[in-house]
Image (cartoon, rainbow, N blue to C red; front, side, top):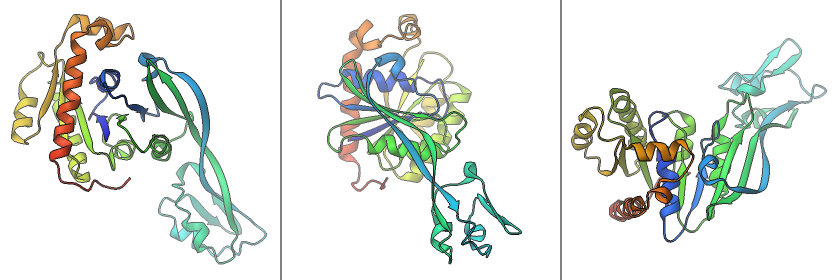
Amino acid sequence: MIISVASGKGGTGKTTVATNMALSMEGGCTLLDCDVEEPNVHLFLHPVIERRETVTTFIPAVDDSRCTWCRKCADICRFRAIAVVGQKVLVFPELCHSCGGCQVICPEQAIGEGLRELGVVEWGEGAGVPVVQGRIRVGEAMAPPLIRKVRAAAKSDGTVIIDAPPGTSCPVMAAMRGVDFVLLVTEPTPFGLHDLELAVGAVRLLDIPCGLVINRADMGDDRVRQYARREQLPVLLEIPFDRRIAETYSRGRMIVEELPEWKEKFRDLFRRIEERVEAAPKGRTEQ
């Protein structure tokens, strides 16, 4: 089973939920940090990195000696990553989405495979939990291909928990597509509700069952719960605005270790997710 822990906005406690649930599971799991622009699972689990792999992606490499400047490569590119100016082909690597259309359509076979570095994927283990994390290259804008590499690194069997990026943009969709369940972490504030509505819309677009965790549940107002009831979204766990939890988090410690009574609550959260997945129609969206 694959669970993606997501949120409409940053700072809701998504990583807190993902790491503590992973550490609580009796059968074990693999934790994927797909927030590749700012991974922070390592701040809590302190994994020992055992292996690193550089991830690259295709960009067109033009052979000027074979090019006839027919412009077919520029015409097919929806992202304007390649342009023909006079008798010169210009490539803009930052705009390229690596579809390979320019290479396929070139009648002179003048476009070869160039490579652009996206970042690295790292494998390790922390607190007994296998961790795979991605780190995007500074200045790189194309996070989804790196996220897909992180997801591909997980074992095909067993439970996988994904710490997804915040928001509802392309990186988040890459971290949610094809999973069995999306656990949305929110907070009972106007901003939390606004971004939760966007996140729920994204999840429903992918037709994936989902549920909510309300963090800092005893502050703010009741509009998030009203929205959940209206949209028939199950609230699977509420985490109070507790000073002990805040102090534990601020020291980079795990809630389930500092406050052992929470281990059973996170185990119960996982069991409730299992029940929802078993009850949901089969046939999730392909990755």
